[in-house]
Length: 446
Image (tube, rainbow, N blue to C red; front, side):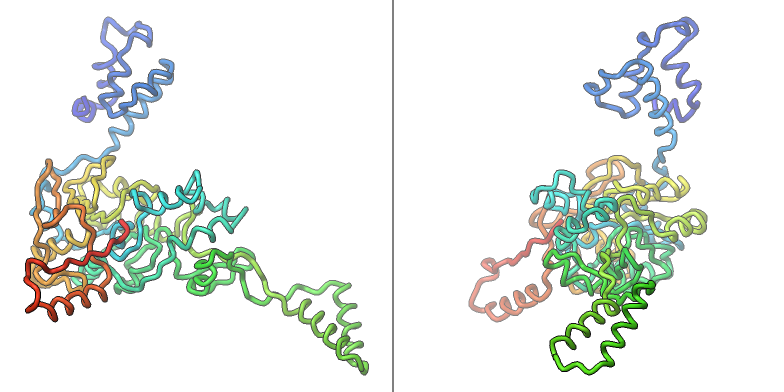
C-alpha cells in the first residue's frame, strides 16, 4: 500500500483504496479508513475507535502527507561495508551527535532507563522536562538549580567517539558537527568552533537575565553543586533621581562635618555603599537552550545556507532523534544523501541506510580499524587490540556490535582506576593464575 502511494500519488491512492466507481456516493462510515490508517503506520485501534469519521479522514490526510515526506533508504547503501566505504570516500560529512557519545565518561543521557529524566521522576517531578522549560525557569529558577547538579559537567576528558569526530576533521572531511550535548566536551577534543554548532547551547557561559552580563559558566558551578540560585555580581549604578540628588548632597554635607561618633560615621558609609555599590542580583542562566527558547541562529543559517547543498554523508551518533527541530536535519537534507545511524538502540521513526547498534565507542573503533591508514584512533580508553567483539547482522541494514562477555556490559570509564588495575595485575601475575584474574568494571551512566 505504501509502495502504491509513492508510485502513483495521493489522489490515485485514495481512489484505489477508499473509493471506486460504484462507491463514490457511499457514507464515510462505510469506507475502510481505519484499515488504511493501520497500513500507513497508525496502529492505535483503541484510540482511533473514539474518533468520528470526519476526524478519521483528517487523520488519513496527515498520515498520507507524513508517508510521502518520509525518506526511503538508498538501494546502493545497505551493508556495513557500504557504510565504511561512504565514510572513506566522503568529502563533506555532517555529524549529528547526542548524549550517547558521552555516556562512557559517566555522563548520563536523558531518555534511557538510567537517564536524567528517570532520575528527575524519582525526585518527585511529574513532568521532568519542566526543569528545562524557559517559562518555569523565569517563574521559579530554584527548580532548575535544585536539579541541575545532575547534568553539571564535571569531566574535562572526551570519549573515543569525540576523538573519532576529531579524526574526521583532521582528514578534511568534517563539514559540520551539530551537537545536542551541553557538556562542551567537543572543545576539549579539539573540534574547531567554525565546524561546530551547539544546538542546545552549553555550560561554557552564563547570562544574567536582568542586565545581560555574561560570565564563564564555571563561575556558577559552586552554586549549582549545592542547589542555590546563582545571582549576578555585576555592580549596578542606577540613574539618580531628584530625591537621590538631595540625598547625595545631604550625605556629602554630613561627611564633611566633624563626626565624633564612630557608629554614626559607619552608618553613613554603609548607606553610601548600599545606594551606589549594589550588585545587579539578577538570576544567572547557563547558556543552554531551554524548551520554549530559540536555537542559535547558526543552526538554521548553516543548515539551509550551506550544508543542505554541500553535504555528501550524514552520520547520526548517540541520539534518539526525539527533539525537534534538531531531529528534522535528517529530513531537511536531500533524500539521496546517505544516512548512517550509530547508537545503542535502533531509531524506529526514521529510515536509515545502515544502522550500527552498540556502544558508540566500540562502533567507531571498529570503523577506524577498517578505514586503515590515517584513521588510527588514539585514546586512553581504547583497548590495545581494538574491538574484539562480535558484529552480527540482526536484520536488513542493521548490525549489532556485541562485546565478548556481555552485550549490555558497561565500558570501563575511570582511566586512573583502569591503569591501577593493570599495575596490580602485573604485580601479582606470578602469584595468581591468569584464569583467576579479577576483572574490574566501573558502571557508567547510559
